[in-house]
Length: 239
Image (cartoon, rainbow, N blue to C red):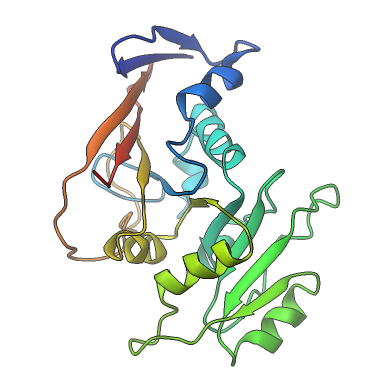
């Protein structure tokens, strides 16, 4: 598989199977600042966040997973919602910590103990009502209590602030759709790393989970295209 760097023009091609491919991608995906929030999503051409099996597993590819791993390697913590963690069968990252957002603290069905060699710390961001359940679900997790806002959700600003208070400067947010939309709507995302697969149709799971959202313009930092037509973009949300 070959990745062609379309933007910026200089950069040439990268053979994904090459032993130095990951090192090159680490350079191409270097964040603009150690302190950042990067949102990473994979979608179909018509904006769906899941493939035929209802998860991203049947939508993503080896190259996309490599890009995701590179973004994670530049981060201090991976941020996800509890529903996405369960649906995707998410495990602990190899390097970064994992932060899970859950109103109820119910992490039943998690796979965080599936790999004994993966010992990255887990932080559960939940409400006072969900704290005991979260602690019982993942005994080695650090439970952080955040008061919900008037709409019943955990405020995204409080999520980011809590992670920064714990020393996590680089945040790699991976959804799900509702959490991704909240982070974007609150203006907390510095960069959107969006993979668009050359496919349409599938489950009705919109990548950003909202019927409407505030309009905003993004600036393209980088665009890669592979042999099968998948596009890997880096979009700045801030001037």
